[in-house]
Image (tube, rainbow, N blue to C red; front, side, top):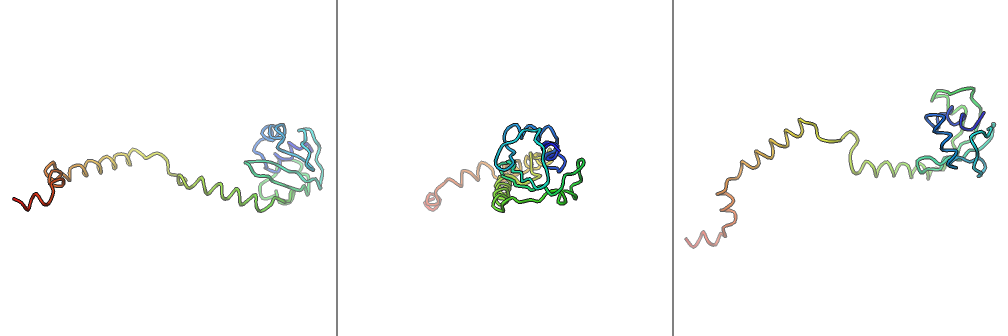
Length: 144
């Protein structure tokens, strides 16, 4: 089986054309050597893949006849990726969540109305006299 078709069939890439593009960019290699999309793979080959800034390493256990379900993938490949690579991926995901929690986007129209009502009610709490008395020195009041 061709390597681009294999990577697509074991669900490493979403489409076969994406797999072919990654291979052309020299992000896929067998035994440390970059391969072409037409390279035939066989059982026992160890494939190194650079995806999302992580170096994956998989061993082919079995060649599937066509694209397989996600639950059947462990029957066909063995993940030999270093645990350090998964730690890097985990840290990267945590740093992305630091800035904005998932699901929090722009405020909705209701949120904007609530904020506007809050800001208006906050402005109504203080009158001009309150501001004037705030800035008058307490010593000035005792002199009178």
